[in-house]
Amino acid sequence: MTTWAIYIIEASDNSYYTGIATDVERRFEEHAVGEHGAKYFNGRTPIRVVYQEYGHTRSSAGKREAEIKKLSRRQKETLIASRPRATHECEQAG
Image 1 (cartoon, rainbow, N blue to C red):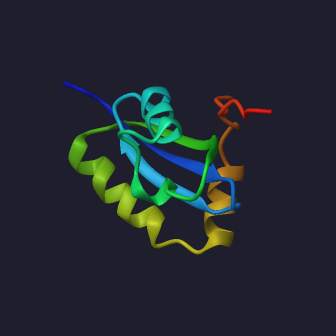
Image 2 (cartoon, helix red, strand yellow):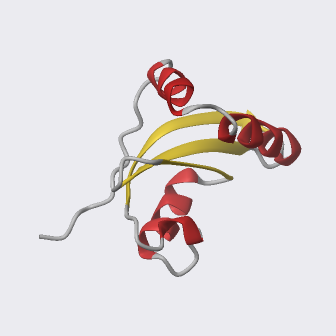
């Protein structure tokens, strides 16, 4: 069975994007390159993955993603602070 993860990416405008994937690093790169990334990143750049939560089924990941998307910014920051920081960052040109 494939395990799914929920992730939160900090964008260049200091906003947060929440998504799900089976491979968070690959998904981050897709967002960064833009070809298969979310429309959310049109006009924004993904900076870093700031939160990851593993061990979900596709169904439970979708439900948890919806829960997180409903949180206020302050609640998301508390959630992010509760987990060790992810280290994957987008390389900035220049």
